[in-house]
Length: 143
Image 1 (cartoon, rainbow, N blue to C red):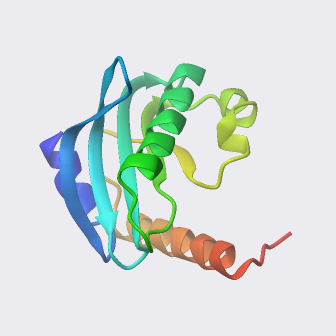
Image 2: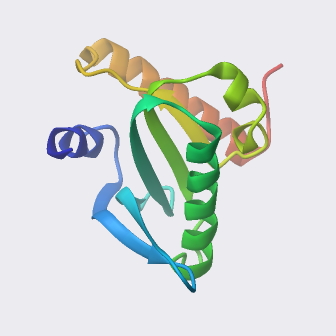
Image 3: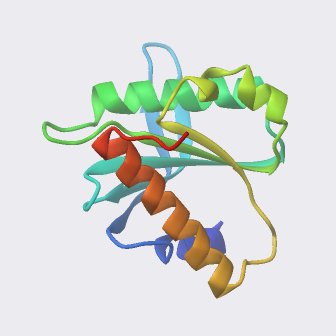
């Protein structure tokens, strides 16, 4: 967890670590978000949940709930919507396609590796993510 936390802190500009295993609550239950970051350039919270096994629809529903609770309880005036990221050992594309991930621009699932990617792979992935964000923020999409 600590190595992954350090790795994520180096992913891009503007990320600030907020908490590890941060508790959020409903009226009757407590839940714990694996990692919480705030990106001061994007002006949004980024919630990260780690799953060692295959991605399940329960995982996706749980992250969707985390994002909604966080938006309601923690998001400040002027903050953009919270982003939820699920890092998992295996991602079933059918589950992703038929879940809330298909409809939500705020939830993402990605397979992670136990070996860190190369600097070139990281740079390419960051450039792809930045381009996608810029397209979303300007309202344009490539077909």
